[in-house]
Image (cartoon, rainbow, N blue to C red):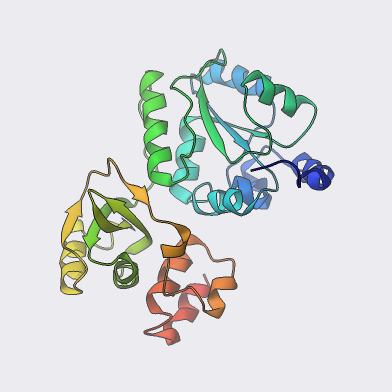
Length: 283
């Protein structure tokens, strides 16, 4: 992104960022671009905490309030309950806005990060050194989770898995239909359209206490949207936004601030059983 049109927003961004409170209770009030993680805002304090706990620092450079892409990352990835818990239980979360002056700008310069940029996550040891090489364009939960695991491995720590859901990718001839039909299955929490091994796939988060992987596969096959099941997601790529939740697009519900879980179910039923939408929108 270019910084030519962001300068008028700088004062507002500073005000918004100054309202951050480092506590889980206030995380829900975060700007959309940073999700619901309980962020720390002081670099030196984060390193001190890392030394005391042995946890690496999860350092997010983000534009705040943020462009559409930044807000989507905050909404879809950094507000995912499993991702949030994984960050908070395994790391010291630290946020440095990339569009603020003062101390934030100093930290930005120290790491040679560009201003007014899309999100970048770096994983630091207690001395402020990168545990794994910096990487850009890691903008989905699957890739981010893998980098978290890589950073923890480098730090000699085990990954504490905190999400109760399991994840598979199901291949089909059309992920538009895949998201719709698989999202309608009870026990499926979230879906995402993507690509894997040359196939269109639906990435599925499901609750194993509600539906087993075997039953999920059988129901997807019965619905005609399962030609192959992947439990390993190496090489997965998220499809463009224009291909996500295709049934939801163009409806009045697309303008609502839906959680990923709500969007999955509304996408599944908005064209086929709209009378069911209330039970998901009221949650």
